[in-house]
Image (cartoon, rainbow, N blue to C red; front, side, top):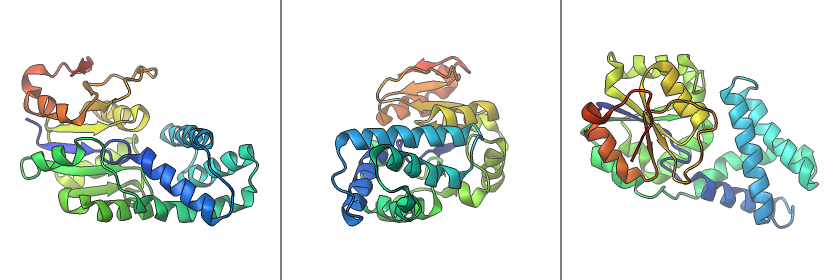
Length: 242
């Protein structure tokens, strides 16, 4: 059984898309930008993912992600791009006003509370994540929280994981499992660092990046199969679906 479970937050424990939609639509109303349609939301989401993926590849910086995504999005839909910086500031805060757990996330975390060391590993902004953790009660569930802005490095960089391991006092990588929905940040980071990975893939997306994952699940209630049976079913870099 794994001793340390490293959990991504957005898209793994908390439903990020619902919070994203709430925050964008709330601020569109506040800034008198008109209706934010479903098509606009899809466009923003795709733009947002593109920028975070570039960050994971160390192609741009975090500030360039936060402002650049809105600058590009507003430019496409015909909104004055000068509002991007202020919009982003309020967006970080508003994200924490809408909390919705991914199916079976809270129950699974509580199942392992006290049995494993539960740590949040997130690239989200400090402002947004601290509010989400507080409003959701996750700050009382996780034993440790590692926000990239505090760490000084983002997932998937080795330095991020070095920091986590040092703070948690981890000496055996075989005792660690990272669970996340991002191939670029979570799975690549875990694989490169030499720890087991569990790709949360509820939409059954193709692994187009070819990043080896240890396990792949489509529902978080299947974590129990992974965590308790890892000594018998762990197949290293071979993908094991449950």
